[in-house]
Image 1 (cartoon, rainbow, N blue to C red):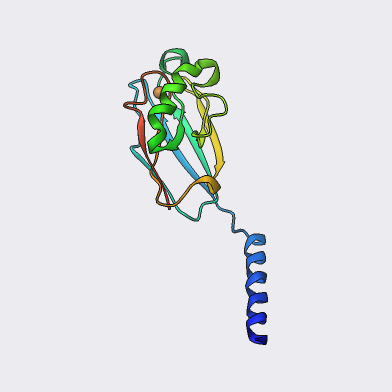
Image 2 (tube, helix red, strand yellow):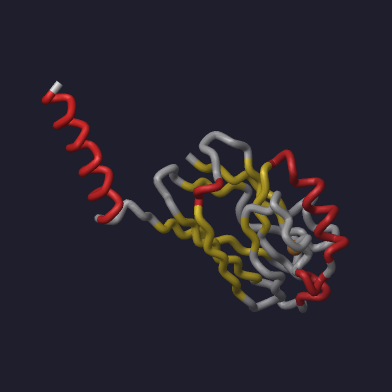
Length: 152
Ligand SMILES: [Cu+2]
């Protein structure tokens, strides 16, 4: 019994020090969109030990945001259609994301040619093995501008 108590104490000590000494891991991802309405990646994979993800979206084209705007929106694959539809209705001023949409796990603002934007989010809400998809929710873009997001 004494040994059991001692090992429990050791376990909780390790758990505490594990947090204190850099268990946090920020993982950085880059993706680009262009004037031909395309992302340069079909898939983004993030390791399961990443506690935070920083996505940088670069618009490599020249067209203005009103004409060929791009954003990066992460949702469960099963929520993509609904999020895209609501994003159209949300309008340009809201970056084509419905306000307070809980199905949107992370998103950037809409940018135009030559611009770059970044979003940083915690992976706490992500489940390993769940099917996630990222899209550009600018009207008419999500059918082509999408890719698989893998966590774990
Ligand atoms: Cu787009």
